[in-house]
Image (cartoon, rainbow, N blue to C red; front, side, top):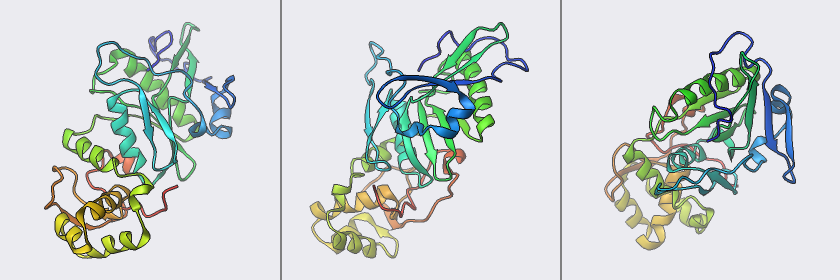
Length: 276
C-alpha cells in the first residue's frame, strides 16, 4: 500500500478540496486528472494497478492474482488479508467489477505539500457507484498514517457519491470456509445443467450436505457441483461454523445489496445471475 509523502498533517477546511487521481490508462500510459472528472468518465475496474504491490521480505504470503468469478478475469492482490476481502466481494451480488490498486488519490495539505494514497481495492456496484477499500491485516495496521489517509479517502469518495472502507479482517472460520468454496467458483465445476438442476432439487428442503449429494449420485461428481452452487449462492450454508459433511444445506436466499457496508457475510446465499 502506497502513501507517497505519507498522509500526515492535520486536516483543515481546504485540505483535499482539489483531489486529483492518477492511474495507468489503456496501453499503460500514465494519466492524471481531476478526481471528480475521472470518477465519472473512467472505468477503473478495467485498469491494471497504478503501481505494483510491494514484496515484503519475511512475509509468508506476497502479491498474487485472484481469478474473479464476477468478471472472469484476474485481480491483482497484495496480501492474504486482501485476498480474503476479494473472496467476500467476488460473491457479493451487488458487485459487478473488481480491480486491485487501480487509482492513486492526490491532494495538498495545509502547507501546500502534495500527499497521496493508493487504496488496495476498487469495487464497482451494480448502480454505478463504487467502493474504495483497504484491507489491513489487523485493525491498527498502518498506524496514524493510514488513519489520516482514511479520512481523506472518505472525503474524496463523498464528493462523488462513492464510499471508502477499511475492511476488518475476516473471522478465521469464515475465511477458511470461503477459501474452500472459492476453489469451486470456476464455471467448470457446473459440469452440466442437468446435474446442477438435480443438486438444487435435492436441497429443495434443508438437509445435510452428504445426504443431498448421495441422493443425486456419485459423490466425486456431485460434490464439485454442490460446492459451486454454494459459492454462487444457489445453495446456502452458515459460514460461522466449520464446513463438514453433515452441515445443513438449503436453497439460497437473496441477500441485501448493501451487504458489503453491513460487514462480513456469514451466509452464502443469493447469487442467481449467470457467471460471466
